[in-house]
Image (cartoon, rainbow, N blue to C red):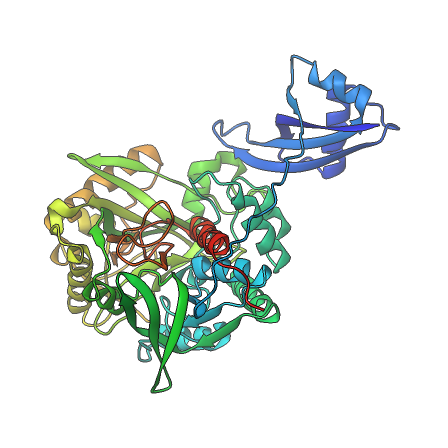
Length: 535
């Protein structure tokens, strides 16, 4: 009879092959080579605290004879516990009739996972996405990045996959939810690398994420869901505080769709939709976020600073960092770090400059980049629900004007001296179509510029070389998170509109791909607990 034991904090040498690692484990645990033993890694993290002794730290489920398993459990040198199979409670589907369609608005991670769960359980949702399918969207974005016009309905913010499709594809999250493993398993089933299921800091990369997104949409359709692209939510119609129908437009034609419920997963870019909802009386509140710039350094500098003599080791890949500091009473921190990536144009409206970071799965670009951002709150921009949104728009417009339509950028040395950059040197900006040398103090609020300066000086003391004079700063990083929250109750419905389920980053309830996916999944379950399936 076999038993499975979870053993934590197993050291694995950087150069150890799988066979060598298993051999070392057997020797440590006194398990003879001819005794059957299966080992499944459930978590793998890199320990680089000691630059001369970098290794992996692994948690693994080990399955072997119950007698030997019992001995491992009683070994005081091991951090071990028995693996118990969780009891799965049957899901209780609702009985309320559907008076209309169950609609999902937006096909980013929140909308994708809401629609997938609904379709998996036979609810056949209608999904509307104002942007285009992934292949068309990639062409539209590439046109913009090579100097063509911005497509206001198909860009980095709008289209299949949402804003995360043009990112590093990070799958880390601070939330605690049992559905996280389910999200990662679904990504793997749709083409993501299997390693994301156990790495402590998993990522897909924008190139592989596109394949995953397309596969998920195809699965939703195969299960009976309907997906309409280039379809925009124009109006919601309520009666006595209850959502009854929506008005959508597609190819110049409008249609009224009766609604049993609606998952609202519109992301951060849909400011016109937010304003429409606000005018319709949907309750919202301002919330804090952060603004600043994108900082670019040579990836080799980051590798050396983080890995020392192990820099460029093939099993390490491009190094990451996360840095925090203070500017007066404000927090300053790095955000959305993209190893071996590039800075990308992420505007969703005319005469805006918005920057973000992106990298492919290989993370093999010349530069590393990350946002360096400063906390802002209602005390800075106003207390009405749309004040933060207007604050973002002013920053993005000011950046557009300062750069003459290009992204304003400067060297760190020039930024610290409050002067305009006239020539970039050893670090080449990766933003396309191009940057314009500028004095970034001219487009950032004084407190934000001061915060970035304080952060750079602090980070230089934390990570050697971060204050490199030739490092490049590009403005403006304005969409770290939503500047507002669409208020909802414990039942996940809007407090001002029953049947409306706000989810994800745009609604102010998530901070990345995985947390948005989980939020969408939870909304789908809330809907399924209410409504019966309509055959």
